[in-house]
Length: 198
Image 1: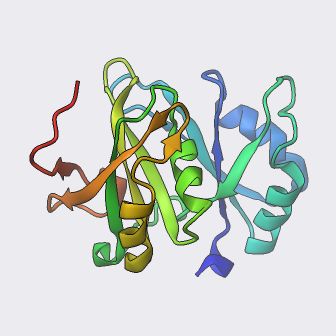
Image 2: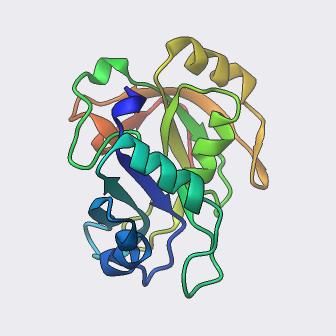
């Protein structure tokens, strides 16, 4: 349950941000447990987000309230913090609880976080979003997936959000059909037949 989550997602990070920088932001709280900056498996470059684990849910909540939207030390960027959908190293045990949709026609500037928040504003059960990127260039391929905990909300989103703008383009939504692999975002989705991408 959310009450037990002690890990915050940190995003919109500059390419140079690493664990030691994030550590310097939060170490003085005395409540930091671990930091993981997510890196591209192929290039080793940071993906622009990571996870920060604290000693307790209360500690993480305090950090979230205190830092979110404030300026990161030595930069002109704001902290972008949110609850992590799952803690570092944890995996969802039952992939049957995930209900995903496929979102196409995304503008090049749409990030995982923007896609997630576009849906979360309407559907509280949104558990995360993933924009599919080219492993070589890191650029968006113009489509992605949004995960919901609630199947009813997922079903509503498929009709209600179709044609709604995310950034500068209207989204095109259809069902995501998972291939059978491990749970979480490692899941590669087979795109429903009949879609062609530029």
